[in-house]
Length: 57
Image (cartoon, rainbow, N blue to C red):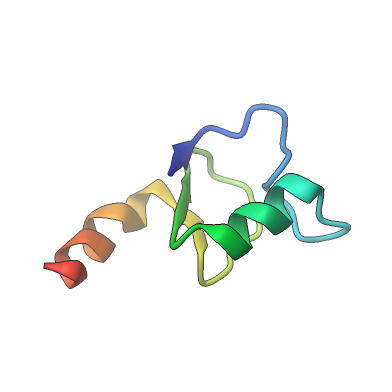
């Protein structure tokens, strides 16, 4: 899933909102199209998308 997260529902781990918790648990990967957010093994910046796709192939 790719999102700009305009309402910052999933950007930060400090007191995570329900949307972030569900997405980290249910999705294999989430890519944010923004520069300031808390990354995790499943939530990454859009710049990581191509590398992750290459690894899958």
